Length: 371
Image (cartoon, rainbow, N blue to C red; front, side, top):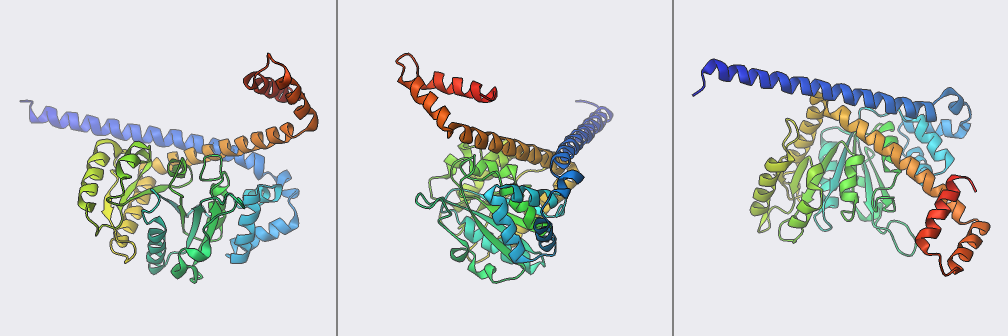
């Protein structure tokens, strides 16, 4: 048996090591954040850049800062269009709305994400918070637009002037969240909405990629759907900060909560935060205040531990990568649509010794050389 003094000394040494690690991680995150912010500022917000911005865009930005809902809707449309004016607007509002907290809500279809989002919105309003919601909807195969819309979801909250709801089609590079999602959320924050919720489709990669746009991620599950094990295997578990078992009044809820708690304690602990597992009946609002408390507790944890800075740096890096990826894909698409390039492709494929892999690689190399 070890002496009490030695045990206490070991505890104190471990505590010092943990504190040093926390300080070091915070320093690294702050440095990365500063570098990325400096890069974005130089590219998008320099004085030369601002001098070239059309006066109407500057006026639109001012109206968004003033909280005009019509201006915000117009600004979001410009950003989602992906044109120059949208980027100019996003650049002007980059430093606004930094106090907003972003919450991602993901989970399998049928879990009640929309109902929970509605309940969270109403509960936040009761606490005096202004709330914006970005609802990612499935894409129509005919029109390419969102198949669900503002009028079919969250009707109770939509009439509140302290709530702004926007539906967006799930047509991003990640099969869910488009590269403009984070910019849309930034505009919402700039308009004075202190809580910004993004609800995903819940299929494909968007369930995981929500962590690249949200500070706190809620994973919504329901008992008896057969999706529980699939969700645990899909990588969503690792990015969940709060587990919500919705429709908790149905059979199997207790077993699901037990399984989630077991897995959360085994693999979900990050630093001093272990994701809580909370039951809700979103349609009646039961359990929703506890979910709000968990979100706010996680926000406080992010601020106190330095993890918030690290996550923000990671989100900014993901945004830069998405923007570069979009520009490259746009340029490549324009290159491939050129008639001369199309003719070269047809001629190369017509040769019996050329295959699509070789032709694609040759085209890519020619595009890099500007040919």
